Amino acid sequence: MTDTFKAAVVQAAPVLFDTPKTIAKLAELTREAARSGAELVVFPEAFVGGYPKGLDFGARLGSRSPQGREDFRRYHESAIAVPGQEAARLGEIALLNKIHLVVGVIERDGGTLYCSSLTYGPNGRLLSKHRKLMPTALERLVWGFGDGSTIGVVGTSLGRIGSVICWENYMPQLRTAMYAQGIELYCAPTVDDRDTWLPTMRTIALEGRCFVISACQYLTRADAPPGYDAIQGDDPKTVLIRGGSCIVDPLGNVLVEPDFTGEMIRIADIDRKVIARGKYDLDVVGHYARPDIFQLSVDTRAKAPVIFAPQADNLISQDFDAATVAGEATECSD
Image (cartoon, rainbow, N blue to C red; front, side, top):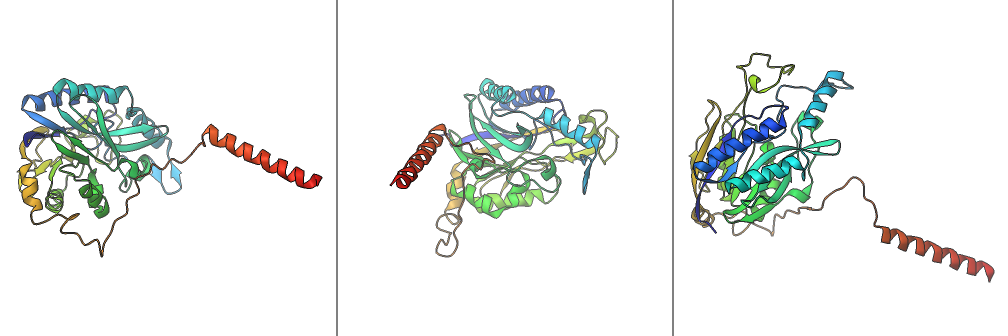
């Protein structure tokens, strides 16, 4: 396992509602990060598929407008299936650049969209997928809820990688579940560009004794197509999401400071030996825990809304019913 390597946060915007152009941009940004020596490249929340900040999707209590339905149709069309052609292309980008890639996507599964984070290895394989458990505010109108089956941390040659998306990072139980899986490279794709985001990331790094790698979008009105009826107006220079990407080490030291001036790639040197130095005096799921007082139960089962019983089970049920009927008939004949 590699003790030292370079990690990159990509602060950029997708081409909103144009997924092919977005993936082409992602490929170029990944090449740039890899040329700078990065072995782990992290993109923001909803980079592929977009985060249409400022749209209300025509929702009012008790009604939805035709224009809002059309906005959702465009958004649904921009999302990607996992697995699917676009998801495979992301794997190819990781393979071509020989990097670990973490990217926020809008995932389409039937008629429902999910805010997801995909992690690829340098061999191009999809290592893990996490669906956001709790969309925030109006996000709940356009995104579904993930379940416990995608709360995961995956072992890699760089360390144990996991993703927690945007305001999920304010869910103490979810953070604890990640710490309990030995997360070392805690990826936090986001669109939260507030000044309060950095102290949140420093708290998590200190709490989990892990590296926190947070990429945020930098989105302007010019990145959106004509007819994008955002509340912020039509001036192409209007900044909708101002960035603030950062990287923090397990002792809370800021390796990449937030920058709010535009699109950029920022690189930090990661030294995994700092993790053990931090665990020396704080391991919240180990020697600093009190399981005699506090315990957390995590349900990691997938929760499908419709379950079809296997054909064999149906046959067993039919045989049972037939035997019951036969027995009742015998009793009657006696």
